[in-house]
Figure 1 (cartoon, each protein chain N blue to C red):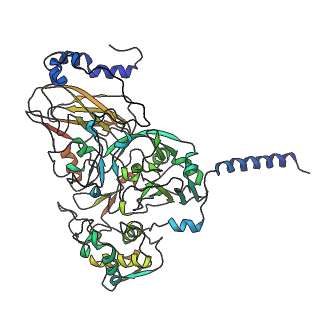
Figure 2 (figure 1 turned 30 degrees about the horizontal axis):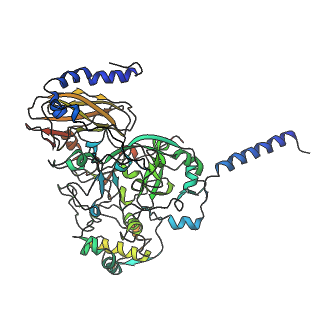
Figure 3 (figure 1 turned 180 degrees about the vertical axis):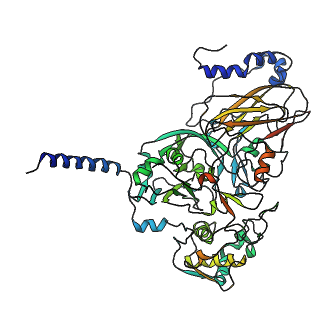
Length: 423
Length: 179
């Protein structure tokens, strides 16, 4: 069954997916659970071919595909009027693969989406530099560029489950503040050389042109200097306004709000600037009342996207699939438990497996119809293992609000209903 | 008479100038005047604070005209962030994070009001009004007295109750790079 042009790794992945076993169970009684009314089906019922619509300038989704983000407010504040929303979540349960369509990338802003004319947009670079400069978008687009596929995750992702587990939520509600694009732009290192940044500069203030002037201090570690991008492209097109048009900062692996959208100022200094967002907002309150500051990296994480919250499954063959990611690097392993975290099996990982990128995992599962719980846990190339919820909460308490990365458990009752639970 | 060495040296200088000019094709120098327009951040030591001053009493008026609709009377009970109270709640099961209970620095409060507030018209308050508003909010939290008048010299010296409430993440506490 394996074609000759596959790499050994891809062939190994196919093997672990166990196609033969899939065909075997699909052909039996259990197959009905997967294919629905397939047994009563006849090809005679399939509508005949006919000429289709004329060509157009823009490809719309099929009328049969209903897929959109959902605007929400804070934890537990769902079904809100868009004017009261502070973020809009990606439908992870309805996406396949790992790249997020541009219009479905999660959205978070602090004072709305500004309408910026790129011919009037400017980037000011100043502070501890030899040359204080003003750049136009034409300047920036003329510079050497690079592209990188990496996830972007809001530091609030997962915040529904800090204190309790609402049982009427989907994976879009619980984990929809992560997305992945191919990002294109100018390496920050190029700009650092261009402006002649002082070697003593260790922090950079990045500021947006939005109403709030969102500003964050970025540590100039070797990792940031070598990986940060001044991005103007997402998935092959200019950034969309909700994601920072015409220019944003992109910092692979670091919390979403550092990736300043509508970027208009970079100021180099030798200490953090201590803006509101890095003191009063994106700091993690621990159980003792002290808060962790500059916890910038997104931890190793994963979630099963199917079956997931509010879905229904049938006994027999089920495919378990989901996404894993880590701000430290590549995902090396995802394990799945289908018995409430008592026993674990390795899931297969779909290629490509990129550093600081969403990685698709999957596993065959035959559900025996008994109530159970399913859960995933991921490991990254630095050896970080996604913690179970009890250990996680024991360490950080329930007040941190941000950086929730505990294992996600879905309970399945005797009727096959999948629901969000703490563990 | 030019020596060969001088000719070579001058040629090298020309080459250097050429390659430098090439890299300088991107952008133009920023003038000090335009940098001042955008250089709005205020640091913990007070650098970046403008001239001017404001009193608690003046701040009450500024608040009434610009802030009360979202933040409620006396900084509580509004539809947006609560600004007052919450001290002593940070280790409870329902922590209340306000300027008084959570914000560590007065300089950050000045910076944030000046850059982001009032929400519909950010940047519309004068520097005097911003100082006054900071004074009023701090007074509501019991941090400065009712007759306080703040300016660039005394504002950074005010100690906030939660100034020691933050623990730097070890990875980013001391930043080094190999540049």
